[in-house]
Image (cartoon, rainbow, N blue to C red; front, top):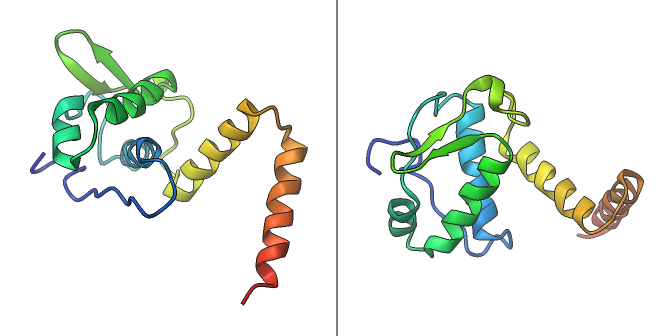
Length: 134
């Protein structure tokens, strides 16, 4: 992966954030920021797994989620490529890693059946608790 936008990426096993989400967020950020342009080829699932010393399945899960969200496309026998800009639904050039993390949080909350109001209430409660911790 030398010379690719992912070459300096390192998985943070102590972050509490699942590894596949870290990979997904990083790639989505690199696409949104323009480090990967439409049509650029991404490392293969196997190459990225070896480079990061993680399971093939972990990288595959991140790639599958990125494809489902329209960030990337897979061409059988040719590889995985960044989708054309008009195909990228959620990605914006201004997406930051924090915004991508929040998007993931919202998706997980929705999958658990929480409404937008529930999510806001939980976040507000967590922020209120944080204010009183030293």
